[in-house]
Length: 362
Image (cartoon, rainbow, N blue to C red; front, side):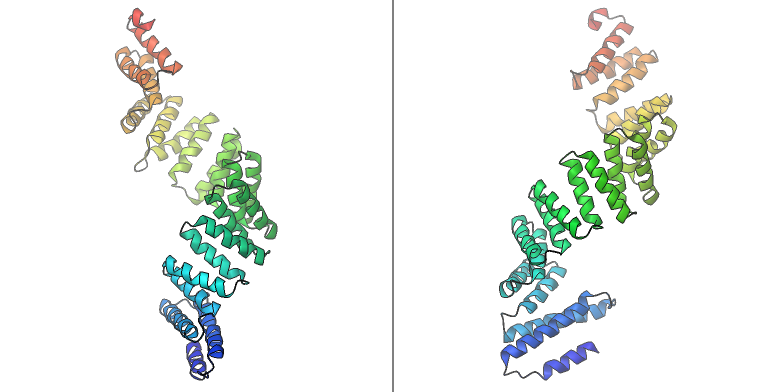
């Protein structure tokens, strides 16, 4: 019905008044695009009709007056939805050219430039959008993301802080700020503060749970680290990386039995990495389950033949069990992989002593 109304309005336009027609068709194109973009229309067929109509009205408006900014904006947005980013950038640049006072033109142009990895251009567009709309937090957030791509960490931090100053509960900005403080500034206490704010405003943010747990672990605060890894697993119980991380935190607290459960889940996951398998063997050994340790140290070596620690630990188990020959073979390999490892060299010496090869032991 709305499209019928708009079509009637179009048919009644005085075609001889080009500027007036261009202006009115731009308004119609804008309204139809708003319907297309909004949440009220959910049927895909109806949305396609609205998209096509907004594009048609835009082209008609431009046929009367090519300097109308709105039709170029609409065509740019529709091209972006179709992932035709080159056309989208061209149209949005025209929207900016014909209306350089509208922040949204610059903002949408910046998004396309970012998608096309034109980060310097995107930073200019987002900066202009932020100047035109000082209270538009998304412009600052996207500017921060762009500065990250340009490796301008301090500028990114400033942009995220500005976004937060505009909208204090902006969880995404708190999360990006936390990550930069953590990984680039090594300000672990500052990052923890930001992660906690993320979880205050977005309590189910699993990424924030995992990341704050990792920071607590770096600080050797294993109690809080365990708390947040466990919380993350309540939302994603099969996440292999989180199972592995939780097992290491439990291991560091001496909770070997509990650690073994999560280490096993990570190690037995499809395509598990050598480090997951090695970790399972390490915790099994600490738990006194030497058979499981031997099996998984051996498996880790098959997955990564250059993992010196697996050779060392497996060699030590065989040495302690009295199998000096197997121990010697493994420990020679360990020393060949890492000649500077005191642990490897020391255990190799012990293996030679066990075989009464005193010259080699010395």
